[in-house]
Amino acid sequence: MMTPRMNAALFAAFLASACATSTKAPPRPEVLVLRSGERSVQVLADDETFARVVLSPAGPAVIEELRGHGGRQILRGFPLHPRTGESVDHPEHLSMWTAHGSVSGFNLWNDAIGPRLTGHALRMRPGGRALIEMTLDWRAPDGSTLCNEARTYTFQSNDQVRTIDVEHELTATGNGVTFGDVREGFFALRLQDGLRIDRGRASVLTSLNIEGHDPYGLPARWIAYSAPLADEDGALEEVTVCVFDSPTNPGYPTRWFARPYGLVAANPFARTAFEEPDSLTNLTPPEGFRLKAYESASFLYRVIVARGTLDAEEIEALWTAFAGETAP
Image (cartoon, rainbow, N blue to C red; front, side, top):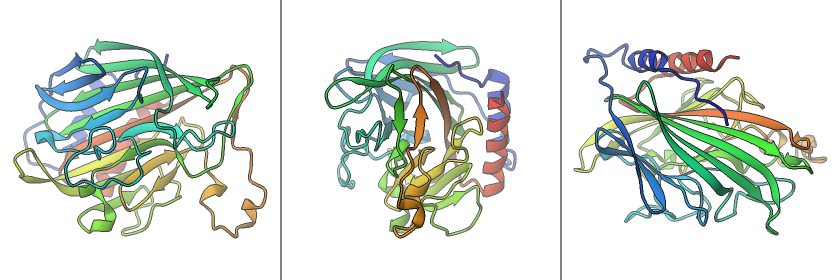
């Protein structure tokens, strides 16, 4: 199992940097609590829902709910936790999840359950960190195991910024495993409809820092969405949602399977899949990312939910701090 890389001092500096240009008081840490239920674990920040993680061997091991401050929903609820009036396309989009469209030739992106949970543990760490550790099997349709995974979610929060570090360690079984060069994958979020680019209220930025560009298939260190979102009482506040790719990850900088209707996925395995259909590189598709028998590879991503609209310079500073924490 991998260990979280961000200690309390680093997190305090990280949170302070998010508000460096603000005239507000320094951010106040929020107290995190993990509350176990029948099928899920609720992460509370100062008694307010931060996230809800599904932990059932019979269901998907995903984050089905993520909230910013004031209870602002960040992810689409459908199909796991549907809410009135939201879009209902692409039922394979499981809020915040990990999957891939070609794992040794099997399409596990459209699998209704995805990697199967085999065990989990809840831990609290110094500095206000809450951890959910789990083990999972990636299985073929016949039930055979293609690879094993150790995954850790690390939650931290204050009254300005909430973060989740998501670490995956994939280990091949005796036959090895190949993650194919396809668009559909790997670490994904389906954002709520208020963060859709095609509805005119949200904006998107990447580390390429090209205003108004389409990030589909482009390699970038980070991607960020901003929009006014309503709290539980209907009050609007600007929120920025960022996803960071670690420079330690295979395939860095990742390509983004990002669509204007709210899908954003870091796909470290895709290369030619995002090229034009008539590209010569697609005449002989490459094998993809191969792990030999019992070989492992690790992937780390950070999700940030911040109050207000962060500009490219502020986000880049946060990514630089993140990259420094994860350096070997």
